[in-house]
Image (cartoon, helix red, strand yellow):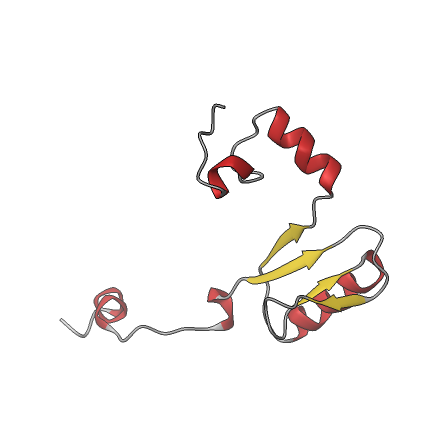
Length: 102
């Protein structure tokens, strides 16, 4: 059974490599450089001028997959809420435990 490479791979220990990693990157329009995100130690929010150097650094360390999380300003959050765009912005009423329809 162990002679077949497919079976060997199925039975092998779990291996984790940089190919399995996804690096979240937080971006903010109008920001120059980067700023710390207080609620997440060692995680930064990047401006347009600094995001590309961060991506280059990740690629140099063989982290090839990123997920971008933009900061959505208050006016856009209000628009998304008014137009009931689920999944984009949590409904404020749900966060407060109120009826989402009222």
